[in-house]
Image 1 (tube, rainbow, N blue to C red):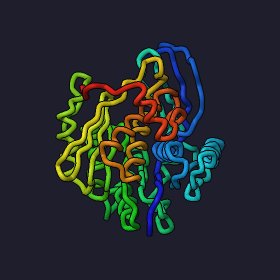
Image 2 (image 1 turned 180 degrees about the vertical axis):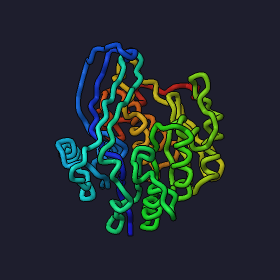
Image 3 (image 1 turned 60 degrees about the vertical axis):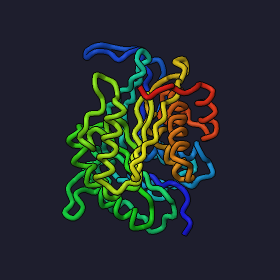
Image 4 (image 1 turned 45 degrees about the horizontal axis):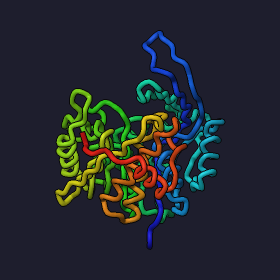
Length: 339
């Protein structure tokens, strides 16, 4: 079988994106400058981003939403972006996940306040790989799905069960992580590493997985990132670990080699918010992997896609075709160093 396309699994939620003039202190206030609603979550963002990068590529998803207006909104988003949603199940009586995603104009920082309803009802039984011919499977988000996070006698947790089933079906696997406490992250993710082909994460997440501090005094230490990525490789079966941070990205390969690339120097006037930049990076990188590009080229596209995403407050609204993202990055220019 010739496999082609990307299958996503896990979190779909409704994002209520709000651009505020500043993030207020508790009991304070801020002004909303822009507001919009969009799809969000790891499964949704990856699926839509991949479709926008390469509209000809088959994209499908596996998820669970509620039987409510938000769930129907997400189904419509999938249809609008040609995403196969035959495995978008509906849980009667459940509330679809939603997030208030605030972006601060003053700092560019993002703040998420979320409600998890349908995600907490997702189980390994919702995932069926018997009829898929996709090449890559992108799964997330451990730490916010109660039943998937729960201990399982044979597999440690439901994420392990799903990853094992995907690989047994011949699909290559990648796992997206959530911003949760490092000790919780390590407990959930380390059992998954032997069942992954790829791992694309940020500097804080790789620190939690590896148990190595990567951010000191608010700045990422690239050498510590390399050490953490190599430690994670030793714990698992991945052929590579890709780590992104504001100034650049690093890919550690199974053969011991390291590929590094500074990020795009996006003009400040172009930046509306960083919401979804990590998802955009992962989408660009996975597309490059899917197309068997050299790692250097996949990493460059990952940065270019993340840079393009900064132009809107939603997670996916500013993504364009992969060639257009690279054109933008090259026009803006690249940083000179990782620090």
